[in-house]
Structures are given as C-alpha cells and as structure tokens.
Amino acid sequence: MRKILNGAAVAALSLTFAAEALATEWNVSVWGKRRAFTEHVEKLAELVSAKTNGEFNLNISYGGLSKNTENLDGISIGAFEMAQFCAGYHRDKNPSITVLELPFLGVETLEQEIALSMAVYQHPATQADLARWNATLLMPSPLPQYNFVGVGDAPQTLADFKGLSVRATGGIGEAMEAIGAVPTSMSATEVRQAMDSGIVNAVSFAPHAHMSFGTIENGKWWTTNLNPGTVNCPVVVNSDALAELSDAHREALLGSVDESLAHYVDYYATETMAAWGPALEERGIQQVTFADAEIAAFRDAAAAPAADAWITDNTARGLPAQELYDLVTGMIADGS
Image (cartoon, rainbow, N blue to C red; front, side):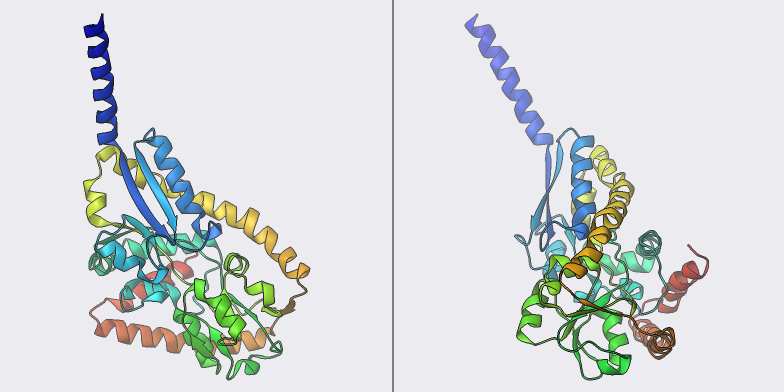
C-alpha cells in the first residue's frame, strides 16, 4: 500500500511540476495607478488568464518595473514582456506613430481613434520602426481630445495663452506654440508637482488623467473646447517573448485585444466621463469656452504647418511620411 501511495504521490508531484513548467508569467510595466487609461490592460490580463486556465498570466506593475519614459527601452532589452508608453515621451524613438499626435486631425470618437491607430500600427513602416526596439505593437490606449486645466487667471481669448507655460507633448505642444504659449514636455507623474511649484501654469490631459494625477485639486479653470489633439499611447510586447509563446497562449493574447478595447471604451464613457462634470462642479472650476471663430483661426494657424513639418522631418528620416499622413487623413475623411 505504501508503495502504491508513494507512486501516486510521485505521479501527482510530476503533474504539478509539469503544470508549473507549462505556466507562462509575463511582467507588464505601466505607471500611476489603475484608471481608465489602463483598463484595457487589466481586462487583457483577466481574459488571458481565463482562456488559458491560469497557465498564462500578465503581472501588471504600476511603476515598479520602470519609469514610464523608459518603458520602450525596457521592452528592447527584455526587462519585461509588455509595456505601455506614450509616443510623445520620446518622439525620436517612435516617429512613425507620432503622425497620430498631429494637431487638429479631426478625430471625434474613441472608436475612430482605435481604427486609425490600428491601421498605422499595421503599416510595414511602423512595424519596422518599432522593431528597432524589439517591440511589437499590440493595441492603442485611445484617448479623447485634450484640454487644459490651469491656475491663475483664466484665459478669455486664445491671445491670453501668449507667454503661458503649459505642459503639452507632441503635436499639442506644437499647436500651443503657434498661439504663443511656451510648451514643456513632461511625463504624467511629474505634472502635479510642476503645477504646484509654478513651473507650468496649465496642463493638457484627457479627463481621466486630470482626475488621476490631481490637476483639478488646485486648478482654477478648464478649457471646454480647445481640442488641439490627443496623444498616442500604445501597448507593446517584446517581440522575442511573443514569438516564444505557445500557439494557444499567443492566440489567447492576440484574440483578447478587441474585447479588451471594447471594455476600455465602455469604461471611459460610463465611468470617466460620467464623473468628469461633477468633479469640476464640486471644485468650482471655471469652464472656459472659446468662440468658434477663434478655434477655427487656431486650427488654421497650427494644423497645416505642423503636418508639413512632420512630413518633411520624417521623410528625411527615411519614413514614408506622406503615405502615413495620407492613410490617417484619408480614413478620417472617409469617416473610418
């Protein structure tokens, strides 16, 4: 009987070790805290674990693995298998996807932002661009148009932005420079301290980030309709790690992207935007709305020069910049 039991125990242990050997653990580097911006990553982890019966797990770290501005570098050396970053943090490292950050593109919905992002991500030039960092683009983090929360006197016209120090990355920064503001690029985790210390007078974010990073705690005003553009913040995976997955695990990961993005969009609408208006009202934040004529003049001053400069600069880099720009603007014109 002892021999039989010992044999059974050995068999059970062998099965346990085999199961552990089959298990895959990926580390995922994001930042801040769980919020609308990371809901698709959280949903992806949930779906992947469920589809693989716990054999493939995404361990999400909020700032414990890397600085947010260094996530792409971490991916490149395999320090972790998945990460989220924003193109504007290091435009020279990912110039292809910065086409999605050009000002006044005219994107109206998160669904449209997803479609545009995925089209650009699937372009061979973009894939080659990110391959330099051993990175494969997985999915975007679609964000609505940015607006500013600021301190001090609220601007009454766009001319009041002249000389104002603002946190604005990518194309938004270029747009603000066109009306005389002084843009500075900094990561989301740095803005509250910069705002408190007077380094910047106003901060551009999507609504969820204004709430998550505390700009509305000391902000006095918010622009309702400036809408100069947005940022593009993809989720990427280490290409070697992706290739090493079993077929079943790779399918569980890639096959969960659409559902994760759908969850993100629903969450942004039902949770974030539902809380945004009350959050402003509770704090007595003044809402500043500019005249349509001013917004039109702003668009005319900023959009074409920024696009022309982007095409010229990135053509010189060897990118098919005009082709990427035409892809994006063509899809928007078609209502895609």
